[in-house]
Length: 529
Image 1: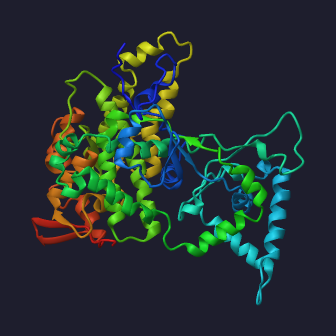
Image 2: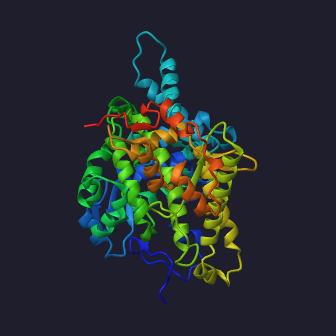
Image 3: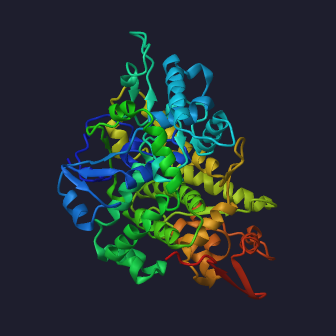
């Protein structure tokens, strides 16, 4: 029987008889609330920068070529990648930051062994060797990204350089035997889990690949109202531009740090060899094939972000924001596709939905209520999509209620919790949740909606914001978003004086006011050549 549910990319076989969570079947495998924003970024970069293969064919570039992607789609292969395991590095960096009750005795002994080896390699003239060791540990502590309350090996580095992009490692306590030696316990580390780096970053990478499988005519039609450049509309030129720009994320000015990281990890070559054998591949799952539209927007936005002359750490932080926004955008867009009959009302944004943002401060009661109602509609849309007729049919004889997990871990609760972590949904606790703009998010928007050095009118900026992300602030976009939300158009929501977004753009240095009624928004960052 033909299914009306999303087709997978790549074209792997999905067992339709398996009673899997309906959210995974709808959104792909997988976006989940346990994954932190940092870990979305780290996992996405891990696929980009690691050794990859499809079947027996190795991929030697950041993205597979368009020809390889098209050939890949005729096979039944998953994408495999081999991110490194660096237990020695993590032990020195995170053991002292981890919970005391989670430190196994063999971990502490191996830490002492590594420190003793490190001391023998240090030559200090005007200071104590212990002080040098302390400074090295403090340096590594500064790169802690996520997992403060986890076991040391399950914590994650912030990826300022590709040498800090390391796969998830889980320590399994053994109940059958006592472990007295570090090397005897090597097999107790599970390096194939997806507990915290739970495939969300992999899914974002697959969305990028899926874009370049899309026919050029479909891309051209979709891009027509977006006012993109010819190079951004042409798939071959966009693909090549991404291949040229992605190396900027690896860490181009971190040679000394990379040497230190490699030196620490190879203090014990036996551990490194045992945990990084040739057969230790991770398997990417799949993304919905019809997510190519939001994937294309993501590809264009990443390319613009990489084209701007930015501090490398700031670029990573902004990309982290972009990854989280892409998760929220993907869930919303996919929910709209499956939430109801074909005549379901859509907005004028490129993906058909609307997010109504309110001022971060000094918002009126009407502004708060409209944004709150819009957020409720978005959550209801996601919940309704998960109850698609065919999804319900597949689960009707299942003994366990999978919808509770679908809603809380994968569905509208994921949207709410991720938005709060990103800072665009407030308050963090309590009732009255609404969408707001933050300084970081506005900075990201300027950088990805305008090319480096590009200028546009304020009204055009509002239109681009609405087309790419469905974000409505004021003007005709807000009126249309209110109508989509099911609210009557109300002029009381819009202030007659200066817009709050204008104030934020002015404070960020992105606004040039030519007259009282005419303002220009400018991406003040130059092009990184």
